[in-house]
Image (cartoon, rainbow, N blue to C red; front, side, top):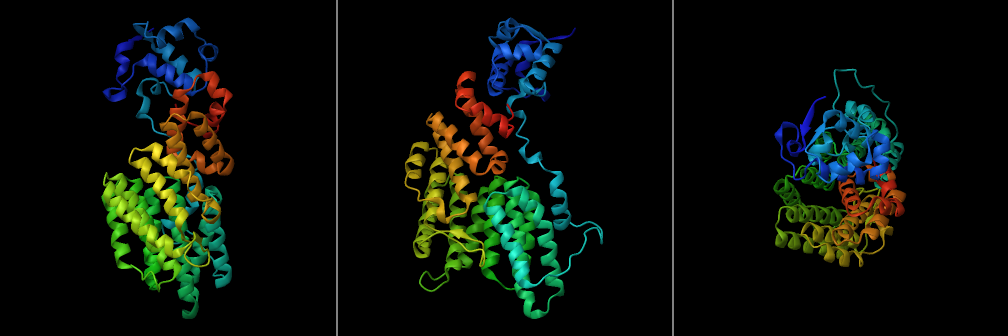
Length: 421
């Protein structure tokens, strides 16, 4: 039977060098799977003595069959025992088949490949769009994905068939539907498909000459750039549009001011991630002035589906503190964040995830587990799709013994989320 030198397993597939050897990585995966050495022995058919010696680095070589047995016992690919971070979370792979109907609407194939819809009255179409927006803001992403194809095709039919008097209203609703589709796809980590949806939203907004909706699409485009690590592009996109629509704080509508403020928040986040803290603070100061003018956080499903106000800005300050590497300050700021009553659940869950990250960084492990548990109770589907949540849970597992992870519910959380070790 072939065997490999344990020292050679410090290199992963393709020769990439990892920071830990096989023994350390084996122990890490076992703990992250919530298994004792005895339990791994039972699952793999190997003796505890063999597992212990491997983890302690007391064996010079290991048979390939042993590696396969360990991988089976841990329910991982064999390569993951020595590649570590080479395998990213597979959360973006979940539900790929359920996206096909939405993809066909956003990226239609040959003529006739998408079934056309009958136009519905403006009031009915508005209700469809608003209901889908609520699904998104309640973090019910799978339900939103299911509803969006019908909403988009109905809105497209309305724009094509309505008389001119109703066409403008239909065009705005079509733009909103594309924005919602883009938002859902960003959350599900399908940024390229989301980009197409947001560009179509901008085209629909341009066709009805609505600069506020068009400005909103710029905010989502900047969000996509943020997710792609294009920080300078994200900041530039948000700032350019904010300059273009800069409102009069005394005379402009709350919706107009809210979109402007959202653009500034997005630009601030981009600058912070690009290691430009002073620029980020300046932009957030401007956003705060807009929030004061708006007075309270607004989420108007009948206007621009925009959430902005003092609470939104306060949650952004927490995230910016984390981006700046100051988790203690993030937690101090989080204590003063107002209630989530007037902001969408989708905003509040992102805030709680930032809090959990800060708690983990300052070693408030029990509090972090409780925060992640709170997120599971609130938005179980959303939590499973968040890559940051997976990283946090892995860090928590690394800091806990197997027994402790089971006692506080961390092992159950990791299993529920499908965290890769």
